[in-house]
Image (cartoon, rainbow over all chains, first blue to last red; front, side, top):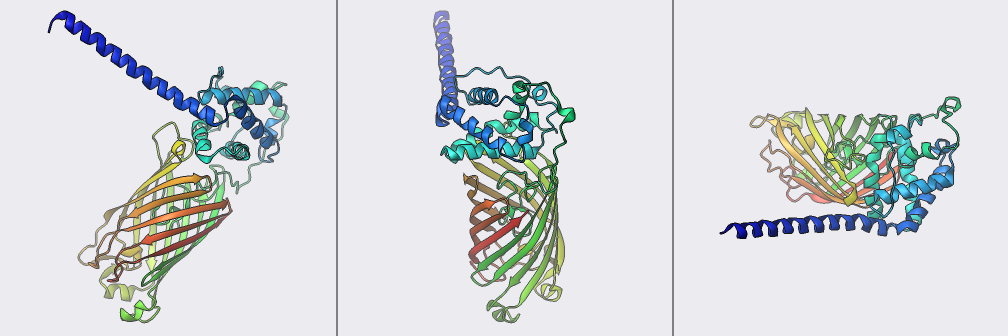
Length: 149
Length: 292
């Protein structure tokens, strides 16, 4: 096999690798945005987040955490954050979780209370459990960052 | 959850936490998510029906305590087994459990020469410690929740047990369990390695003249979460055959429904294989767990 043939083969292989990588990333981006779609897209997620916050404000276990909070602004930021986390077309400038929650004295019971408020909001919007579980799986590791260890 | 970190961003006034009252965390905080304490396995520990899991039973978080009681009935072709007990989960770290088991030989007792409705009673004292890993929060790593534990059993029929060839009427099991929740797939998998001398869960005593040593046994569970309150699955548990009664492995197919954090019901088809020369001991497993 001549040098030109080898170079052509290398080029073809590189092209193949690039194509596979492209398809792979494409598939993973699709999988992420599929969750975004399953959650109702931008409007659906805004409604889910809004419902969660409303539930939390009525939740005796954690409502005190939301004192002195601009609720409409909170809902907007949360919807944006959630959208970015599930791979939706939203930019979210993620600040350090540890810094932003400092002083809130959060425990696992608080974290889980908010999870339950989120589940209730999704239940109210007929989001199937399998979809809920996919979202919860993305959010669950945040516990490590916001709860006092 | 994710609301908390951005709260600071949305705050209108600077942090004034110094003059806010400390929020009180109740001791029985019921703070775990539904179903994440598992149900009560037949020996009283947190787990599935036949298998012990790495979960700490009840709904106490790492700041609280949860207590559960259970009543389990297993109806087999020739026998029945009843288990009633209590378990306390302490700070999602330690689980202490007690169960009283009654093995009723029913009509078979007469055929075996023991007398109709002859019963073996057994007390099971358990302790479990979670080593590392958290069932729910470790979704972005492979690490399972992992625990080690022991179960001490005392059977009240030493004379009969010695007559059938068992060496002891009491014994201790040691186990290590790893339980992993694959939340994005709604799947839970658990495996347990148990070192035991027990014959038929200790109902027929411990060890024998021929086989008295500890043997490693396997327990495995695979469950699918149909919803946050409804789970179905399969379990498998191997058992040693110390007495030469052709003791076989056990399995079950279960469905567990969690009404709320105070009550769950588990129904299963269970097959314990041959027990005391009686073959094909399959039947129904029904369990109720109540808790605070």
